[in-house]
Image 1 (cartoon, rainbow, N blue to C red):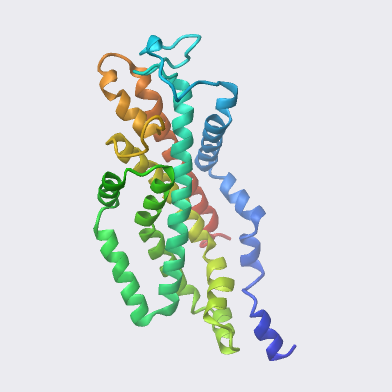
Image 2: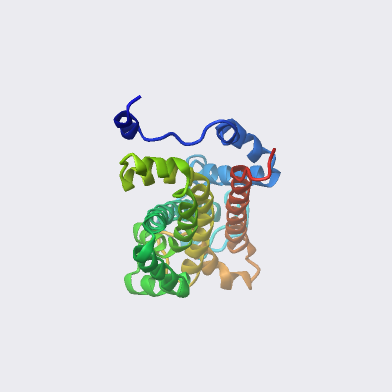
Length: 300
């Protein structure tokens, strides 16, 4: 094979035992051994079914008020009662969960994509480029993400797309540091050095070798980012700065039901609070399971 041919295709990453340990079947087997992670995956799947398919089986009106059905307790017609404007609370839980999960998932993915691109470029470039880019990250981490989110939300009153963008723009900093650290290690591997020696471009080195070999770090970071985004949405909505009525999410339901809880109407606060806790813990458990599955160091 000629040098020109090898240059066009690029050197192959190491194969053999490491490739076998990182095969999909091997990763699934290691993930399945973590019972907490499997339980977390089941909880997330059930909540997605509940929020996105549930409304087709349990149809309610979440747009118009019904003042004749205000603050009713759980019953056969309203399984989780109604709220202060007559909305069915179980239907509201599905509707709010759809917003929370959609915003959390989209914002987590957006933050991971931005952080991955930023961290891989900084780690690969090194020198003054890396120094400048990481000082930007350090400055951003020094400012609490919740504070930035509250200020921007108070100024703009964002809808669902706006929340996704804002959350993504304040949450990419930690993934960028993780990917940068991984890139600093990978850029010294033989297959990357060989590619550069035969004339491969920097872009090819990042896209074809560094990013694919950073997939474990990226996937785990994305999982934790989704959990963090769901919490941030709940914080902002709890303070009244999230999506505006008639739209809602679990944090907004907590805020609306807080005062009613003192009157004994537990169904307005327990279900959304429990949903937030379960989903966030489930995503964190999945992240822990993925981290253990991808981390093959020390395994035979």
